[in-house]
Image 1 (cartoon, rainbow, N blue to C red):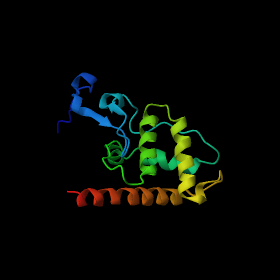
Image 2 (image 1 turned 90 degrees about the vertical axis):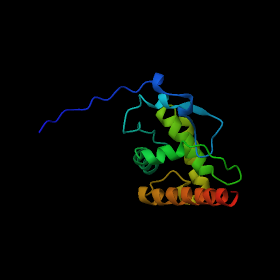
Image 3 (image 1 turned 90 degrees about the horizontal axis):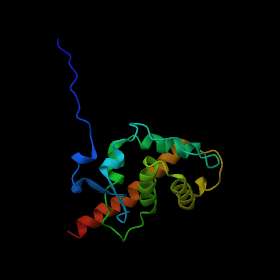
Image 4 (image 1 turned 180 degrees about the vertical axis):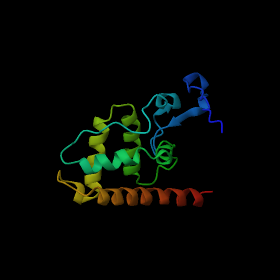
Length: 156
């Protein structure tokens, strides 16, 4: 049996069209990034995060989630809804982009602060359970965005 490797053509910025641009965030249409900015990123692992005071549970959860490419693609899609409260979705979208640009300290702190506002159990800098945080995060993202899909279906 002949096992030959298929050669992959290198992905470069020249191969990308203007329509390959992505708006950042499921609610952050004001900033755009070209797909080529993300081509040279180390795959599949995102960089480590700073510990902002017992935030290991947030850091490990986000690092795992940031390896899920369909989730990243969804977070990078533009959001046309401006009427819904999607603070967590928007903050996570900004954090994704900042993380892969390796300039995420401000966005990570803003994300952590917002999590504390939205769920009082995560407000204080104390040890937490990563699974509980993951459940909160996924539930909140679902709540923020199931309404978005329902709203867009109503307006069709």
